[in-house]
Image 1 (cartoon, helix red, strand yellow):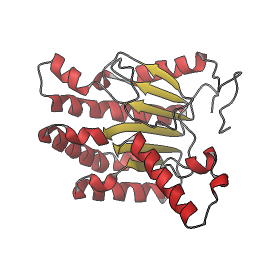
Image 2 (tube, one colour):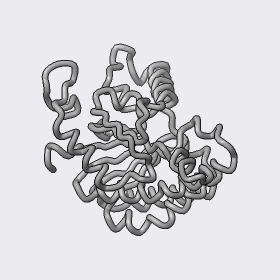
Image 3 (cartoon, helix red, strand yellow):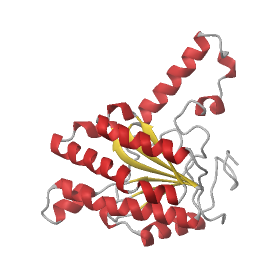
Image 4 (cartoon, helix red, strand yellow):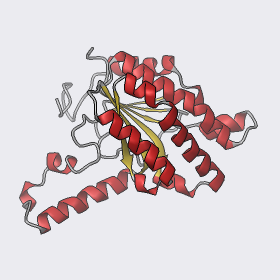
Length: 242
């Protein structure tokens, strides 16, 4: 893989609602249009040799949205798990779910679980993380709780807790941290996404709304990443993960 291609790309897919509003359409139409962008992002990352792609599909805060919008999002997620299954398996893409999948409707849980198990049962060339009912703070709290239980049960001493031990309790354990974080729609926020993991990520914010985000936009972000000299608190060099 070229050194200018990130091992791990994370994307905050933002702008569906504004895309719909600009066209005098219901917000749910923006989410439907955004499904094509998901497909293109996955295909492009697989093509250029990205090892891990993490898509922020639904946050813990998104449950507070209007019921119709949440139901549409869940329906789209269910359809994605069914309709994209064959291509994901054929392309040797392993699918994992980050977040709180138990909060999703049962029909969505079953479809995702089948997809994850099927993709894990064969060799893979890329991992697709779907962050669903996900929150970075909740993930960190869960990791801290797991460490506290290990210490309480004498499986771990307090002085053994370091960054590596903590990271091993995160849902992305075993994966490289994101090299590149892309956010669409021009917003300059992390929105509670991978708060631990993006500590040293290069961030590229594009004005394009997610439903309009295509292969060219992703390649342009990767090109921008390649022009940067990454620094990890000091001189340029490889990431702490190697």
